[in-house]
Image 1: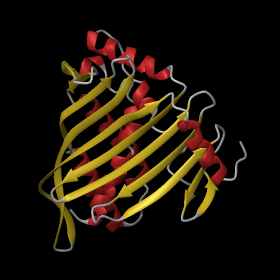
Image 2: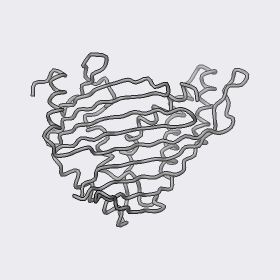
Image 3: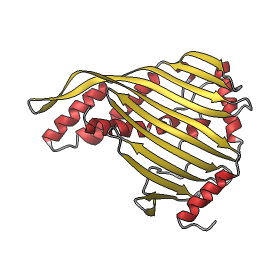
Length: 279
């Protein structure tokens, strides 16, 4: 896969958790779902939380990864975040963010500035993926509860992939009028048409989401994975076309590292001070 394709996939990865946050369950019927909701309620009751988000893509020889480490005070809705992106060549970029509950301040290349990072709202990054269901009951193929050695329980749902297909189709509806119909450059439009067709023919399989709930009844982890199969874009005779297939795996993993700990607000206050806030 060329670098442009890797970067394009990386953009998709980094929006992975935001995609999860848009997936809300309809009816709640299963016993397993009830356990997950209880764990989410337990997490919403804590005063503060520290968690790690890992977004990943792997296909052929390429591995792209982004980590986000979040410290959040749920009492005053302030938070701090550190982002690290590693591309297929191993190059890393770093970004830090702080939110005072009203504005988001980003630190990059030695400078703090407002609204110049990943976050587009003051919402705690990816917190909704830990407190709102990332699947619909009708998409469940099977469910399994596993008792872990530390007393925690892991609940694993195998999903149909239907919601992924619906999101793909919704995105296609937005892409065509916004990008293709208004494009005057014929060469550029041809390229867009190839990628549009590739996205149309993209398929999803092995979709799975798993939640971990500790022995205190608090949700402490979420992991979402699926495999993608799509036509491959190749260049022949100076033109882009679809030929053959490529496969890759995508995943989002969130692990709660601690909660209700005195050091979490301290980390946020330190970040606030660095950003020029007196708290």
